[in-house]
Length: 155
Image (cartoon, rainbow, N blue to C red; front, side, top):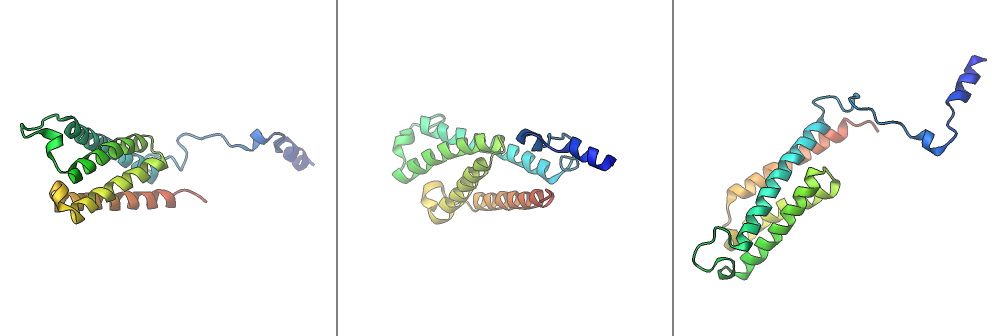
């Protein structure tokens, strides 16, 4: 008979009773979990994206420009790509720092775009294979961490 009384005491009466509280430090949030490594990686990438965005904005604004005319002296392709990366890298930095899904999407767009510009349009930024390789390694590391973080979450 006590089983019936126990069940009636634990039966939810309001929709908000169906919500479970957040448990800090639970098994899923244990130190060294893949999700924590992923968030740490996203924060590091946010700082790098912030630096890249500020670097490109510095070029747009003429900071550190030589006496050859600065931003206006470059080709239209270079100016367009520079403004694109100045904006998208800063937006990606905000989203990555917040560990928001849209931040990762914007960062992925930025990384792939930079690799594509370097490979297919070497006249824009010089076509550095090191930039292509570093963007590829960072993308692979992100996907690896995201897959392992997703696997540790219960369905």
